[in-house]
Length: 210
Image (tube, rainbow, N blue to C red; front, top):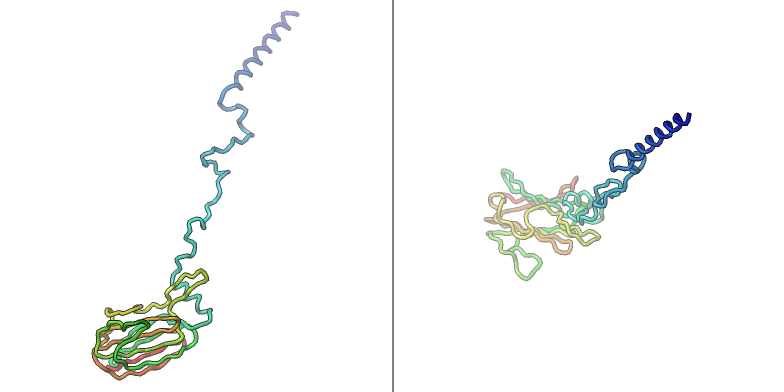
């Protein structure tokens, strides 16, 4: 009887010893095993500790705005904007169309001896005859609340342009100063001309007869 209990006790002791050895390593079944979360790594690879990037940290934001975006916005603002000046050729005339956004501004045109702009010296424009158009108020630049300037005028210039013009037009000048715009057309000879306006959308039209 004593031998039976002694044998049982020996087997029990052996079993406990084996169980203790199997739980003392670094493999599966250790204290950090299933049912417990390990700490995320300090090098940032643990997704639980990462935060999304802040897009404003790049400094880009809306700083570089396209002229088209501003053109869409200024239609809801008070004021008048000169957004384009473009030439078209017809059998009997050359037409200069000035696009206006907003209310129709004041305007006038004259034959001049030379094209003049705001400044001490007239621009150097080749030609034998000159027609100058003044439009006011008509801004070509938009300034936002952060004092960023966007050019809404999309035509030739600003300044003097002598390339890409219809035959017979030797130069074109555009300048805007304090909300008033000046446009000058240089020609290879004097011509008769007419000044008119169109609506829907608003346009100023200078017809230069051949």
